[in-house]
Image (cartoon, rainbow, N blue to C red; front, side):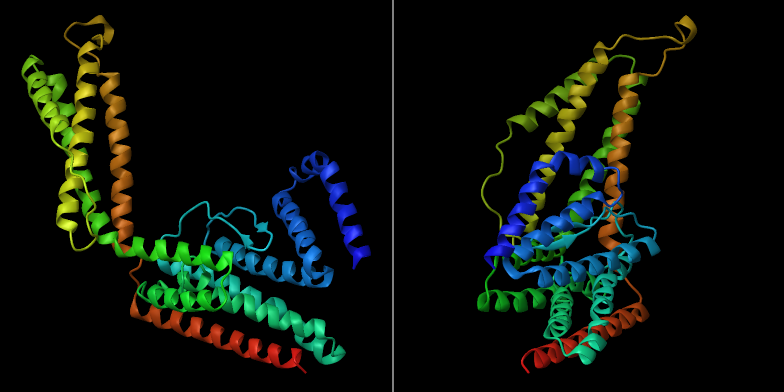
Length: 371
């Protein structure tokens, strides 16, 4: 054991000493990040559990992540390379968001499905050799992918069952909380916290939709106002009115104190509307003052043909960009988790089927390990 650790430390020292050289080679490779993080994870696992276990674990995680990558490519969604994190697994990030929960479920399902396929060759190898190592691969592969099927976001299972109902996340959190109580660990705590935040955000989407709707109305009012400014014969009346409105909003006593979600949403919405009123009124007032000081340019030096204000054009462009973002968010909030009944039945059957098969392999792996 001491000899093995000495060899691993020597390899680690070599890699650290030549780290810049290694990065220089890997950065030209599309999979450089994956390879480097994989080697680091392999070394970290081997330090504690030995090389055979480390190779098996990294292999199982890698195939699982490649399942997500393949599924994403089939849906035309670009992903980052897989990045391994020692003792935390690996992850890929999507460069484009799925258009709906059905697509996200497809991407999520690809991981545990590929993960199951990854350990299937260990079955005939165990039957042929009776080597406990292959029994460990079966057990470990089933355990990893079965855990990932827990109906808690951000785990694959949570993303799959979101097509059925995001209310399932709550029961998944309860189950994960029981597991955490029985066997606490930092990774479990992190997953529980992220799952809790995701579940809560989903619960508050209706309220978020109301806030976005009000901001959309404020932007529409903002665009309408600045479109009228170039037609003004005099800016004095508008200046006085804007100054009075912005002064009144800035001098108003801000609402303080904690408001209980759901129970006090009406008061919370009033407070958020006042906040948006203040933001857009101040923005309008500052823009108006800048626009007044902006030099007037004329097309072809014709005093009867004033050129459009570049300042107002930029402000309009930014406002319309934000308006597009808000409309996309509102559309996503109302349609993302909507799916036909037929789709829900297919997802349910696929989810339960994969969970049942992995559970059977998990039990089988336990039995042959204890022979």
